[in-house]
Image (cartoon, rainbow, N blue to C red; front, side, top):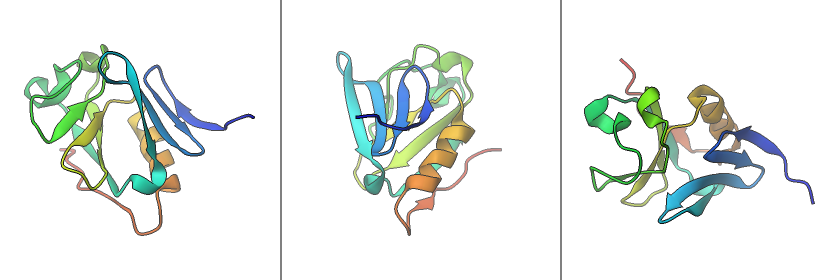
Length: 118
């Protein structure tokens, strides 16, 4: 069976069914998030003290940064609200493209979170 891929980089793949995040769990586990579980997506600008310097894990118990050794060279992250305390903190290679896929595939009534761009 062939699965359509709407967005893909080394760590993140958006397929027909949901988002697959490689390296989310220790040591190398993949997390799959169905689009129906996403309540909102929030775009944030990162700095050295706000996620850019973190390769994996958390410095804040509310957010979990998936593995991305290239995060230091990126400036934008997407935070997914799944209705749970911990929210995935993702740094796709092309955040605009991934956000567009998420907006198109999220359930009706789900919204885009606050945009922290300055």
